[in-house]
Length: 389
Image 1 (spheres, rainbow, N blue to C red):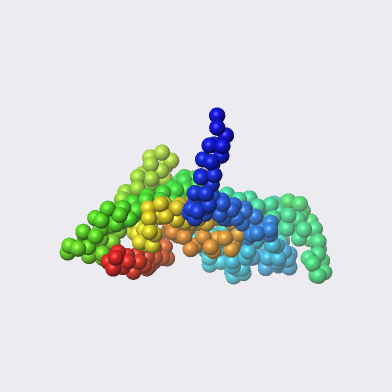
Image 2 (image 1 turned 90 degrees about the vertical axis):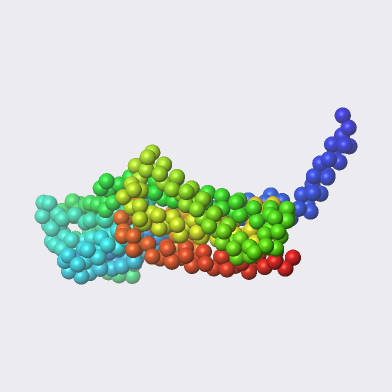
């Protein structure tokens, strides 16, 4: 066996790798980039070791020194982010509290009922209520433990930092308890079903659209595009025709995914068919427009494949297709909103988990329609190079 020939073959391959910019990118840069993304997701930021704060509504209907001390301790906690502090009376406060959780503005709400402080002196004290959104499978559990810990400190009279001890706690303080109320349990399938159906559907929608959009580059190579442009068919017609084709295929792809989710996992798609169809149409249209813009920006099919893989995987990681966004830091969640994946998941969650009216989808629909329009304009501008070639 000739060792010299083996070494020569290996060196030829290494030289080809060295001169192939895309291969170097996929081999060395992309793995580091994805490691960085997932490290930031699971550590709450580079080197910080912190997770996202639990979005919380605090509703104090008791308004006694003890309840105010308890609420303030929760407010001071680094583990929660208070999105609203409600101290009004009666039914309006409870409705506002429940509405904040149902609409996804908060993951949990803590309600201190009226008369709670005085009831601690009785044999059957009033419970605190924790209203939970179980689509976040971590936040409510962490919050319950935090509430019990904070409640114990407040009842024991442990002073807060830089403050004197609160008023002496009443007797029977050990009986104070927390009742968790899941606002989404009735007749619901697992929230992960709708979330991952949306996330996986959008991820593969983007992959298939960018792959199919490569036909533009193939038609350029075999001069089919040149012959089309020499006829009455203009570039605008070509792009819009391709966009319509990719969009229709994308709609069918998402429908198949959610139909299977209904048949196999009990997701009630048929009941919300109007909102589902609307959201699916605009999501498929936006994905098709992105695919055409990428195809128009790339020079070869290989370049498009490399760019699309990196872009789609990055969007899927940040947008929640791979990892639930509720475990990400606030910064990462905001970055995720730059992706179609996050908006689509939020929209489908509104439909199938929160049972919100179709009219509530207007932010997601507006983002998708606006993105599709801008990307189609970008594709048309980039495609001018084929007309002048």
